[in-house]
Amino acid sequence: MPMRRATHSYTSIAHFVSDHEGPLREGFLLLPPEAVTDEPVNPLKLDLQLPLVGRVGPITAQVVSRTPEGGLALRLPDLQSEAGAGFQRLFSAIDEVRAWLQESGQLTAPAPAVDTQALEERLAELEDENQALREAVEALSAAVDDGPHRGENGLESASLDEGGGGLDDELVDDELVDDELVEDDDRGDDELVDDLADGDAAPAAPAAAAPQAAGARPRGFLIPDLRAVSPRLSGALGGLELQDALVTLAVDRATGLFTARGADGRVRTGFWDKGGPVGFRTDPMVETEVLGVLLLRAQQITEAQLRQSLELMRARGCRQGEAFIEMGVMSYPQLIMVLGKQVEYLFTQLLAMGEGTFTFHDLPALPEPFLPPGLRIPNLLFRRSSAKAKELRSEELAAHFKPNINAYVGLHPEARRLLHDVKLSEVERKLVSIIDETNLRLREVFSVSPISRAATACMIYALDELKVLQYDGGESRAGYLARAAEVIAKKKRQLARCTEFDVLEVHWISLQDEIDAAVAKVTAEYAPSAFKDLPAELMEDLVKINERIRHATAVLKDGPKRREYRKSILEAFMIEQSAELLGRKGEMAIMRHDRREAVACFAKAQELDPRNPEYAEGLARSQAI
Image 1 (cartoon, rainbow, N blue to C red):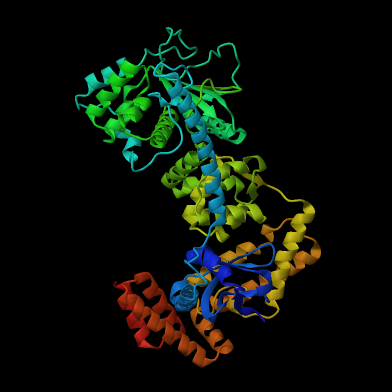
Image 2: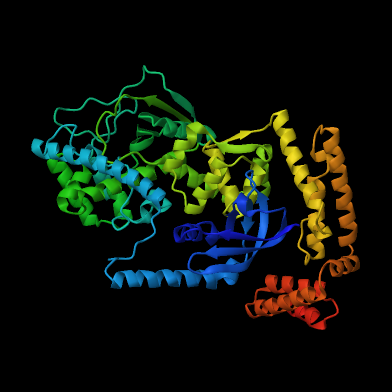
């Protein structure tokens, strides 16, 4: 018999809580193969067996697709209304047990749920940051020992044009990277900017470091002379060529010098460490990009503090970051974070340069120490591409996916490490796991994704631009025949003992438009043209399947025939009770001003009992909302 009901048992509280915080929260559940007893009817009724509580259900479950292992991907559209009370009983029981353990002294504090993957990722981040801080502290100690006129090993990364890492939100807010910071304004600070420029040495030539007087502090970072060295990468700015190069550097964890030459003659030089920038230098210097002016315009320092820092720079021969620390404006860790935000801002300026060229030269080591770790470029590129995808029209996204829509998709082995540098949400990580662990075509990924179809499209678009995904456009002949035989055999088994509704894979309460959509779907799915070069026995089975589909279509597409057929397979009280239940749900939807839900409920109630005037009147009230 067709499977109209299923049960999913949670063997432990931890198992349930993990699902509740993950796929269940998104209205999604993966039913394991052992819980699938036969070909499912769509929708089916799902029961959940919870520890301490027992059965919760029935829950309406829509079958989205079948996994290669034989499980079912289910959507639970009304989960909270149908199962929320049962979930609350379990959590209340957990709270009672926790309170008893605390009162008896066996538990000193509630044990929070632990996301081990997130903790491992955060631990790796902290280890990188701690290593950078240890190196920075050693550099600072050496600088202090050498006195105010130290050489190249002091707080070199405190240059006005340098940075790396992240930003402490309490110190510098998001205004630091606002476009307004680079726009000319009439605030009357031109004199201040000129002073700031005068407080640093004159700009050096971008290709090589200019000679410096003995004991003088150079402006910005010293740039190695690489004119005689061939670059590893080169290309044009302002397009995918640049993005592909940045992805390559991130994958390879490259260390070296990135040089971008704009059409306007401006040169931005970036110092790359382990795949990401740790500092930038711009020639000619852009006054509105230097550290002090950025902080002033973000209202994190005052004009008086900026002037005081300039005086210290002239008097001590130090850089501005060192001056801010000596003034007590910021602590050493805060300086690292501020410089990191500055690097992120300058990196976005590099991406926005437009016309021009770029080169990248590998270096065995950077010419001087930098305080923070390299910027995580993959995360910035991923979010940038996601935002770009959101601005595209649906037709443009469809055109992007069309070449690979029927190809099998997986993660590119060499690009996997990029995902460690992309901050994904829990459900985004779940989607990546589905792509990585299952053998699905791209079109099937959209069906089983734990996030919305639009969000899935944006995420896959961004992963494509990062070159994280790879596609296999073909199957072996043997693999194709095995898959086709399984598809035909499943449908053949279903037809052996099912109703005409099951043939079209719809619920027996379906409306006319739902019947029409189902007919189009199964007709296309099992059309002979959808298969290639089938053996004679499989083609014979396929012909029989199509005959049954045509018969079911003839019965169900005609309204009166459909209602008579429904009465022949179901008890009258079941049809009547279902109509009453739908009517009550429709009234509740009207009270919530949920027009869509109310119209659907009363339309289905009228489908089941067209002679009842209450349902026609309810449908009219629903449509008037």
